[in-house]
Length: 320
Image (cartoon, rainbow, N blue to C red; front, side, top):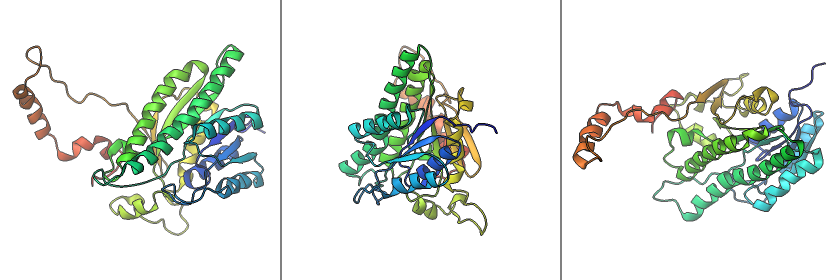
């Protein structure tokens, strides 16, 4: 019988008590990984309510009931020390850490002119700092192992960004900024850890979860906002995203590094890094106002209004 793709590997999935994280943890376990299921367990998608061990424990129990290996961790990844303890748990329980999937997050949506400092800080704290905290301790673990081994070791990081970063989201300046920061963190990490045998990639999943169900219900122009017909898997089900995470966590994806991918409903799109759309040179040593207006004004006036949202058009999003 052929070995499972992740057999003998250990993984951490953050925010794995519900939605995307749960589907990802179940998929990694199905592929043979031993999983640390992390979830702080607060009931509110805005990070409100009392923390609970319930969600993480339930998913870990579900994995074990299916014949897999899993343990729950209920710490807050946005807390530096608790993130350290999460990585240590994987190392102590399974002997090493091989895969880190960062998924934990919250929403506190508000237009930029109405957003409070605390709403900004909370989202940046959980998403961006949470990704940094776990990545920091996992990277230190892999670097130490690589030094001891005298060469590369096995390591995979899958981070969670969003199309809110790619195409903008008017009522989510904190979320869009955090998700953009995660892409920067991912590409920097990919370059820094490649020498140790570690890859780092980011996904932009489109999925109907507790965090997004009202968003998709409100976007009637998006086919993804429609409810699936009877007997059909929801095009926005998290189960469409989990297989890509499983693949990126596997040895088969050893050459995939520093990439950003959009995934949903049986579709994966590899996003190119930004390219120069046009270039203008000053006639003299530096530009003057009139020269810039004479070059840039006609250029932008000649472009269709939607072209400035190139990523949105490619990915099938709508303005508005």
